[in-house]
Image (tube, rainbow, N blue to C red; front, top):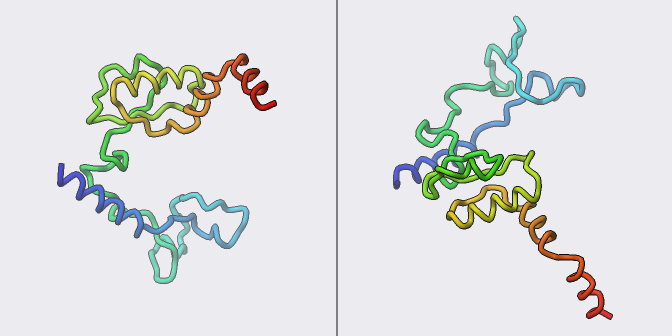
Amino acid sequence: MAEKERLLKLRKKMTAKRPKFVRCESWRYTRVKSTWKRPIGIDSRMRRKEKGVARTVNVGYRGPKKVRGLHPTGLEEVLIHNLKELEGLHRKKHIVKIARTVGGAKASKIIEKADHMGILIANPGKYKMIEEELLITPEMRELEELTEE
């Protein structure tokens, strides 16, 4: 476990040093977006890796293999679409990420079950707010209005 934590710290340090890879001459023309594409021109200074030109994507910039693809907590991220997919997950190995296509009601049920199982959720934010809104019934709103007056 200590080695995993060391590698996660190393990955964080490497990520901070890693340059932002941009497409060739995206800084020059507005029509060229900055998303990475490999330079292929025969005279391209970027392809030839000359001095003073933006860096290109390289194997040397990758993170440590043992922690590659893991969540910053060191747990394996699992994308969840329904309650059935929560079965078989272990709280010390996995962290849940609720898919963006999941609605508020189903997401709140997933959060409830995950909390009961002790599994962490990577993106509970917006679903927690929806859950709180669902808990407030129209009768409760009327009572709040009456007490305010």
